Image 1: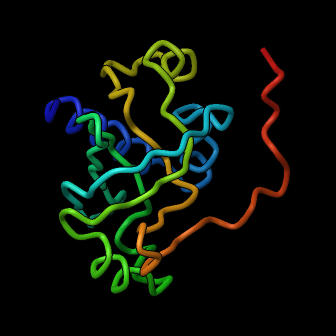
Image 2: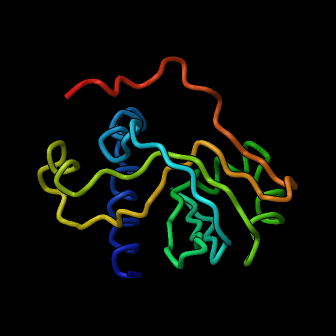
Image 3: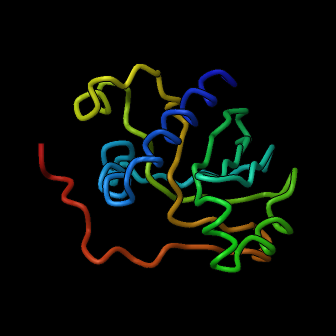
Length: 151
């Protein structure tokens, strides 16, 4: 599993190194805005780094999810890094809502040279909340809802 996480991190790093506009516009090709989920579990590990912070969340059934969050620079510039480091510690109970990663075939439809296999338990968060309500982070609401009826 660690190898898959490392491969996903490398792929996302490559995408992030592209121009800002390109990286921003490629995001929907990696994450499905029509497959939002909410998961609850305990923080197993957090890696605060650029271009993405990784949170590994272990659910009660033993399933591990990787939360692909904002990078260290963005969290620092938005003054979230301190509270996040205090709240997202090993064992903290957290609820995350976000979009699931697309499968490898769907990503390859837009990036033909994408060679990795993705971890299907990867989530791009729209909100992260500690169960004791000592920490809460959320993106602003979307300007318009995603078109989930398209084929």
